[in-house]
Length: 51
Image: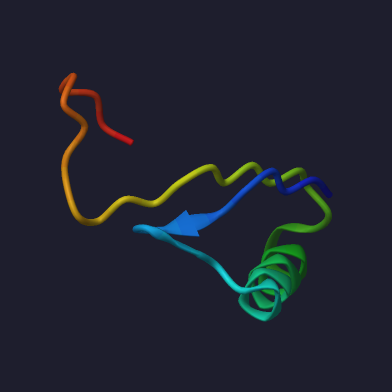
């Protein structure tokens, strides 16, 4: 299990929430690698790419 960095908008996600997400993911999918870089709900990517 590897988590690089998780951000929700401009705020880093708390370690507790991160652990909860990992636990739920492992329960549902098993121990797969997760790489969540950023969830930006405030603006669309200026280059037209979907996140």
